[in-house]
Amino acid sequence: MDKPRKHTVSPRISTKTKEFYESRFDSLNSGVTYAIESFPTLFRSSLHETKGKFKSNELMFILDVMSSTTINPELIGQHLSYNLADAIHFDQHHTKWGVDADAFYPKVVALTRAQAAAIELWAYFYHMIDNQDLLEHWCHTLL
Image (cartoon, one colour):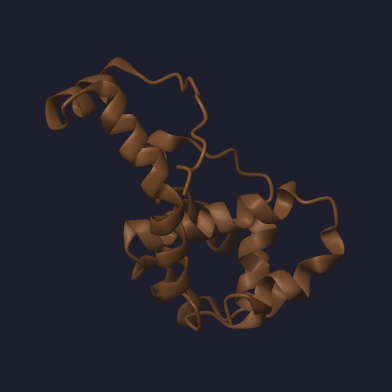
């Protein structure tokens, strides 16, 4: 059986990230390859752990709030709680979706950073698809 074809990519990384991989792996390339290859599994696993934690209207609220968020790798897993706190406390945006902020927000801050990052990406991926009419279907994946 033939080995699966591997593709070459050339990510741009900071000096700090470069030093991290070089100090922990045999080479920079092997460290970055490991991280890139393992990320889909880590993402799916972390997202699966959040299944059933939120109600449908809470997930729609998350998608709505996160729709204008530019995600930054250095803040992975932190965008969610900050943006939702602002939307609740400053804009009262949770009322649009009928979300009980007192019951909802503690669930957000109880997420691990990996789970929060997975939800951030889940929301980001939703806004990248062409068909925004899939809102209820998209939310159903985490119910």
